[in-house]
Image 1 (tube, rainbow, N blue to C red):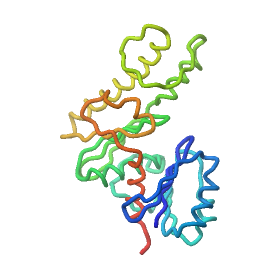
Image 2: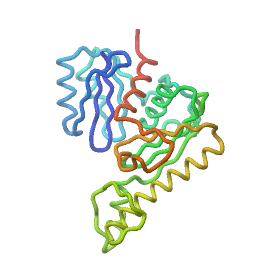
Image 3: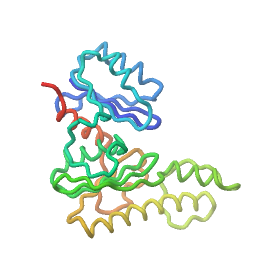
Amino acid sequence: MDLVIDIGNSRAKLFLFNNSKIIERINTDLNLIEDILKQISVKKQIKNIICSTVSIKIDNLVKQFFSDSNFISLSNDKIALPFVNNYKNKETLGQDRVALLSSSIFLYPKRNSLIIDLGTCITYDIIDDKNNYFGGAISPGFPIRYKSLNDYTENLPLLEIQQFQKVIGNDTNESIHSGITNGIIGEINQFINELNKDFENLNVIITGGYSKYLVNRIKNVIFADQDFIAFGLNHILKLNEEN
């Protein structure tokens, strides 16, 4: 059994894999990650572990609780990846983006793919049908846009993110929702339109916790499920596991 860990800015997702099949999922707050790891180490026999993180580092905890397991670190520059990394500063490519690229190759092989991840930030990554990674873009996500309007103005409120369908808002709150939601939709469509010029039959995948606010708002894209990044991490794990 293998353990795949995906750590975001506020929560962590843990997946127990048997080969390429998920047999258990755990979604937890970051402050509970140590207790969860300890429980798993007591109850389960874990052969391999891989972790992607955009916030806290748990390498020492993993080594403490799983001393007999093979820990595959995405920080290791010798790690085998399923794509050719043409990023100029390879060490600065986020672990979450590495996992997303791997997942696109595993689930949609031999495709020109654009992976859009809607988290705290929005990331765009392009990979071709020969598994060459070219780079991408990073822009502010939903929470940053809502917070910045409140932080940098005197009178605009901090609103809860919500799904918003209209283009024209008829009060301040609706105007904020419209500006942010339709601004992100316009940004995504522009990336898709530009990349369609250079990549034939572009496969567009949208994922991330905030992607739910855009369902049915963007045409001809795949909205990935909650396990998308986990399959990518497991694919890297299988490339690097010790026999």
